[in-house]
Image (cartoon, rainbow, N blue to C red; front, side, top):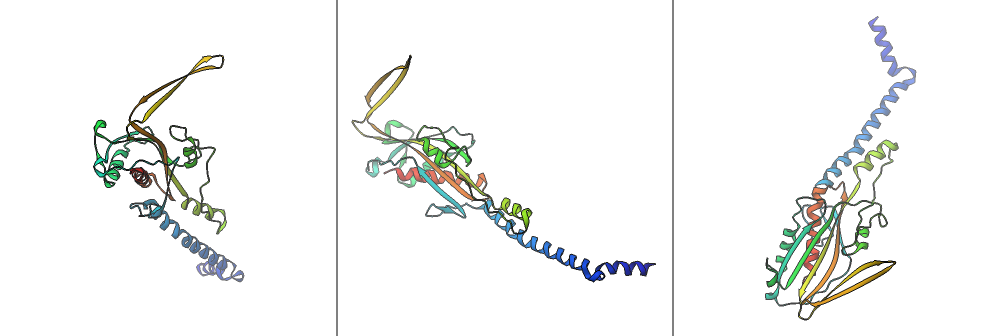
Length: 269
């Protein structure tokens, strides 16, 4: 009985013209191919999430993370003597991110540009005030173009200016493998939006305030108030983006802060 059963089982692989054995070989080949295709997924996904520890000299990329920074307008300050490079720095954060020490990043880059930091505005020849409006994922509601479209003090108009991010999809062996590869190689982007106000001490500079009030029936009254401030005022919005495969926020955050701080410091004469 044993030998008969044994012969019957053995016949499943050798009998019937070797059909079962052929299926077994095909199955082994498919498994081997799947393992081969999955290997780069684990390798590159691990690399992507740890990229970005050091910023390159060009500022365009950092260990696989693509960086870009844009401003709503250009600012040109008057050059001053090295002894007059004294600046007062104020940094606020009205975004939802907590523990964002952007002021220290700004101070570090300004010192590298030869500036002396003071806590007394009366002794400063420059004043830099910044406000972090947003730092987080790039979405349809928060995009680089949308933030710039609003300008200084304006809203973040994301949905009208969104751009699709690329996703490397599979399709090598059916939809299952394609979905797995597409998930592993997803391009992720984070942006940081900062409004800045730069003031430079200049004698004779005027500051004009305009206040409009509504009186009903479509009428309005505008009041102007001008005074000598002796400070030239410049306002701008700066947006920086970090983009990479499977990028995570803890990797993108320091890169975004450095990129924007670098750009602001380069505005100084």
